[in-house]
Length: 353
Length: 253
Image 1: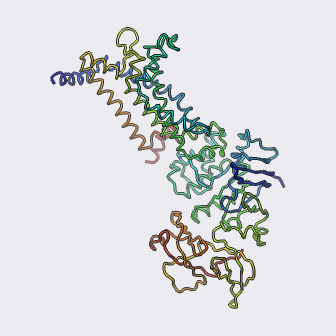
Image 2: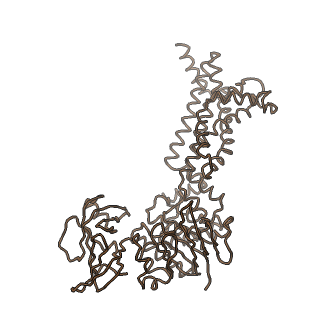
């Protein structure tokens, strides 16, 4: 097993605030390592340190075989690249964006043209070279950003929440690209995510993060297999709740997740349990209706995020639930902040983690 | 009244006939102010980048200093420069007073606060992640700074145009350090000073003609810039060679 990068006792503090706390982490060659944790747990800072654009306050960073000297990172930066969570593009054409790193590396124009074409094909943006990058849709922009990083064929590819704020179609394209690059080019990938399902399917290993520390690290089966305390405390991960489960005579289980919210779950379970409901599996009504859904909860809309064809809502029913509906439904129902709504989902849509 | 009408008629006649005296003054003005701007951009742009991209104590004070200097009366700056360049002044030994060089340096100093102030705010309004982004793609510190500057190109061009307008239309500096010399060896009279002199000596026709051309120059530049900015041509021009732009537009058709 070769180690591509390693953090030894790395701490990063901004003033008095410690955002990364004595982290030890090995990134193994050829793996996809996911940093899974709520917002503010230090994922982005670790990625920035691995991209050598953030200097740790203390600790040691190894890359390939040498210890990284943060006074001069020009050379190592050529071998590691980071795609930001917030898509950042140069205000020029798609071609100029994607070719930027190759130009810096003085790659001849013919090779550059060919590589740009290949990279755009990979992210399914064939023929977009001359388009103005800033005028593309959000999903397309993020794919340009990924292509711009992929084209460099660096040893280490760092992705910060690559699919956050993307609709499922664009997210799907990106997940496919990530898997392919890892498989075909053997690129070592470290990605931050707070998407449980992405963490379950894509990575080789998962590092759980909270409060700047890595609390657990292992394969997805290991991490999701046992009910990890940290995983359970992931309140920040949408629609993940922890509570006490009580089996009913009817063959289902009620999980009391606090604030008077009871969730009915298919299957029998006793004791402490963590549950997850996918935002796509939740239906929104303006009035209570009779339905076969075992869980109907009344609440208010506290947040609205426009994702283009989709809208992400946060509905507070005593506990916050993330709900994803189409833009059309959203418009037709005349939903607004503070609108009172009912959310419904089947007992079988609830997964016990 | 007849004098005024006669003057205006004479002015149009001079403009249309391509009077060498008139166009000599115009081209001198364009040359002095243009060179002054280029000179000022040479030190103003790096200075703006330094102020915008570095964090240091007293940054706000420096920024306020430059934006306050925009309002400095040109005649006061002209006086200060006169004292510096005059024979007894600290730079008197250079013998620059009443030479084109003095005008160019004077105008460059005059527009520096505009270049720096607008430049700083243009660079500061660029997404702060651009710098990091360029670095993650392998750029060195200075290459990353150039990437930021390219994003700010609209504002930087605007600062150059504003500077040019200020330079070509000001009277204080060119009068005091240029001397408004209209005869002899090297002439230092420009549009504004020539208007003032010709008005004083009753050459209303030439004065009006100069005034009209000054306005035409300023308006034309502003209109061209407005149109180009709207079409985003300038940004493209600066970022890609013209030939490539032309080609891409042809293929679009």
